[in-house]
Picture 1: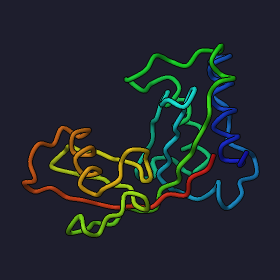
Picture 2 (picture 1 turned 90 degrees about the vertical axis):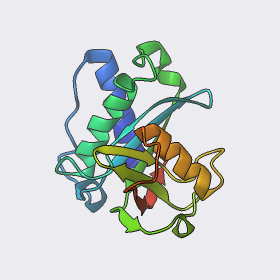
Picture 3 (picture 1 turned 180 degrees about the horizontal axis):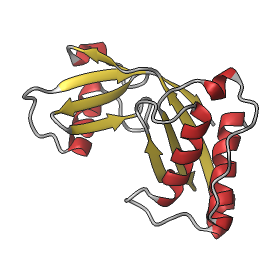
Length: 168
């Protein structure tokens, strides 16, 4: 298991068992010390169990983003009840470190297997990670991201793409 995934797992296990948030490692490798958006996804028996993240850095390091977002994925995803101690052995973890988003002009610049997508219209924002099962076209990716954001028109729609480094 990659150290970034181990940190997400350890963060969730400690928080679920004791209610305490762990501290980042004392010595941060360059990978942990960098600043980037981070998404933590949890699956149980092959089905999504939680996913929370930040599309731009909100904390001082990737390590801090992983800890915060892992706990949020386990306890604050509004689609699911909080993860319980009984479930911890069944959770499979995935951590995506996001590149900086780049604005694009047309969906022809997208590839849903390679790029994630952020849509924005005014204060509404929607994000879809790349390489998701069942999302095979840029049109489908755009439709899902717009729906997540509550965006129903293309008026003044901004589209951004990003790549991820995905760790399991």
